[in-house]
Length: 273
Image (cartoon, rainbow, N blue to C red; front, top):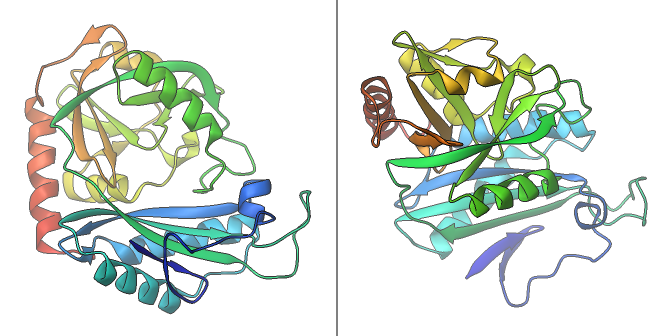
């Protein structure tokens, strides 16, 4: 396995990042997860645009898109696989043991891991913790993921693969690594970005391709929605068969099934939409 680290390919066994890297010591970093299909990344332009937005929001130097593209291409070529999770990590770099940044410049790591297609349906739980829709990191895809780690661990304890958050005003927000959509009276709705959710790439494409509406939704909408589904880079569009103790259709309902078909067709036609 070979990864890209600060300018070139390195063997994973010998690649080293400083123990003083700000991404490690204080979580001062951002990342993107990109789906790689048969050696080609999906929606890479959109992911790089979001990487830049996250960098601006965190006050990091803007990443060089050409360099990141070269890194992605090199890593994919060095590690052939049918379906991969391409991870772009960009941190504040070597810094002091505190919140102030150093002057060494950012660290760029690109790695690829093999994955498999997700099941057609899964289960999720809601958690008692909230997303802060007014926080300094709201809308940024940062490496500060400990809250998600805790929530996802709880989901696993309940035989689920995702945990869903409300925000501080009781509205439905997002999952630990996914966006959530509900079907009400046959129409698809998803929380707006103002709810505090991440501007997911798959979320945006699903809205564009299905006509889903961005709507403020109370958290208890999950108790009455006809169908619920998740979107993310590696899930694409995935139906929920259970939310907490509520059983939903065992496989995708008709509206979700149509969204799945549309996404599969459109994403297959254009790998960089």
